[in-house]
Image (cartoon, rainbow, N blue to C red; front, side, top):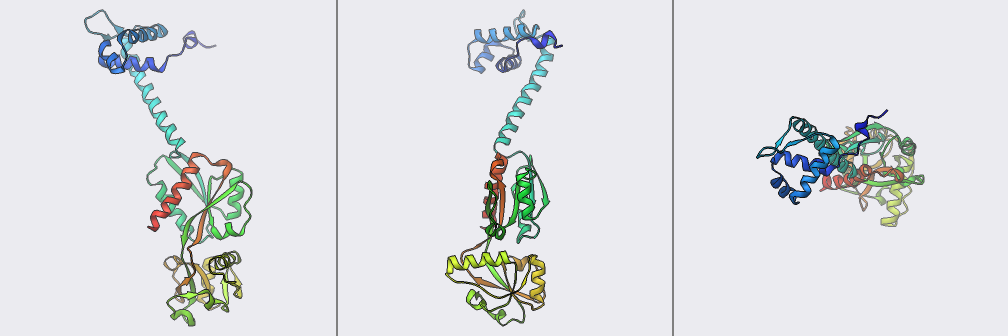
Amino acid sequence: MLSKSLLKPSIEFRHLQSFLVVAEELSFSRAAERLGISQPPLSRQIQRLEAKLDIQLFDRSRSQVQLTDAGLVFAQSARQVMRQIEQGVRDAKQVSQGLMGQLMVAVDGDAFACDRAIQLISAYQAGLPELHLQVEELNATAQIEALQLREINLGFVASRFVAATQLPKGIMAAAVVRERLAVALPVSHVLAIASQISLLDLADEAFVIAPSWLAYVRSLAKTHHHIDFNPPVTQSIQDYRLMLSFVAAGKGISIVPASTEQRFHYANVIYRPLQLAPEADILSVIWCNEQTTPSVAASIKALTQVEEMTQA
């Protein structure tokens, strides 16, 4: 059973504020001036508070207002309450702005530039110590399922997967890494001496490439150069490390993001710029539209801005 004290009318927030100002000033007139009200209403607020608490908080018998012993104890508790409320307001604002909380993030380790996902996450989180991100590795298909089951909030996948896949209803995607493309060649290849290479130069070359990635390059060629690009494919390889190993062994050539040259060094592989405009989408972030919380929305916006800053 609830005690009688808990059944009494609740204390109003403004009464606590008024009490603490009087406790600091030890003067009703100065406290009223500081609160921007006249003295009589302030005196009535304190009287109502004392009546609700059934405690005398101030000794008014002297020339100067003084806190009673009970008032001193209550003032300490009231300050703690006010600090908790202020902290609660700050926390609530941060959560509403997506600056606090926890995000579950997945990264496809087979995606080009998957390491950039970690760089983007780290850059985004650097100034947000109250936002905790937990990262796990999942392939693109598993990420979509995890998003639908609300097991993750965001996922990083290869943009070629997004381009080649009919995403389920409610699953959204946005590119966060864009790059120029390059041709990966064996060092002994005749085109290795070229300063840059066009798609027409590659029309009859044997390719080692993922089908979805080749389809994406073909779409860029069709859209921006009006070229039907259909090179022969000797090996369909999803894993780009294995793909580069085939190139190094002289089994074919491939098209890769330009940054691959800095990330993966193979003694028998050389990279040359590809004449293909514009920059290609390399890495995308995906999320469930039904779960677009403030943290998710803020993260998507910030991740795009972080990538723009890193490219500047």
